[in-house]
Amino acid sequence: MTPRTALGALHIGALMFGLTGVFGKLAAASPAIIVFGRAAFAVLALTFFARFASNTRWQKLDATDLRRLLLSGLLLTGHWVSFFIAVKVAGVAIATLGFTSFPAFTVILEGLIFRERIRANEILLVVLVSIGLVLVTPDFDLASGVTTGLLWAVASGLLFALLSLTNRASSGRIPPVQAALCQNVVVAICLLPVAAPQLSEVRAIDWLWIGLLGVFCTGVAHSLFVASLAVIKARTASVVFALEPVYGITLAWLLFDENPTLRMLIGGALILVAIVVSSRLSGSSSKNAVAAQAPSH
Image (cartoon, rainbow, N blue to C red; front, side, top):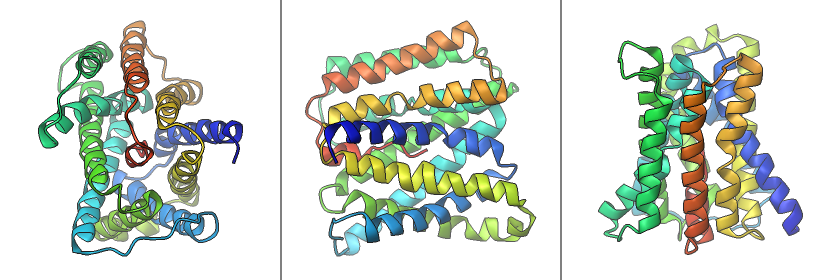
């Protein structure tokens, strides 16, 4: 893979991740069904990639690795379920913008958990994201679907930040595709008891959306991201994936007529600027660390 094709693969992966909320809204099924199906299809896609398109040798897992993968799988389950609840309640744009709060949570939690000093650009990131979320919210009435959906989306961002930090602790040992595969297996197993009684009621067209969500927005997107890191700088990859919300919100506007207000656009712009600036200034990120924090909603 050349740098040009790797950059193209990154943009395709970002577009696929941006389609997550779109497919979730198109599927007329409960969040539990959507997440279960997504995980099941993702397992198939990631298994195919690991078998035929990846030369990485898998790591033998010890008890500590298994505990971390179980924890990360549980966090991924909560992250996905809360995100799709936000999509159903408030729409794709609000859910996507709320989720993009995760870098701010990551900065705060990283400082607390790993005892790392929070730098000035990271403080700026937290401030800008916080202001952006306030602007995105038209009011703070919990009876409002938009406010409730945004809170679910922010909860999704918090869970993803915890997932990223959990992955960071094991990213040096476990290859990213192996970790993603194991996490998706945990997600499918966790939701099987809830999803099983409803599976027969899911329409064929909804299985199509869920299948696309699992194969392309999870398995293929993650595989493209990991493969591109072989030739693309981690910092560049982070900036490219900051475009993911732009793709998602634009598609929601075109497909579902989710017209963002000026205030929402300003708030979203602040959040995106914060992410891009933070990514550009953070020159110490390793490829493993970035792979561990690959967008996965």
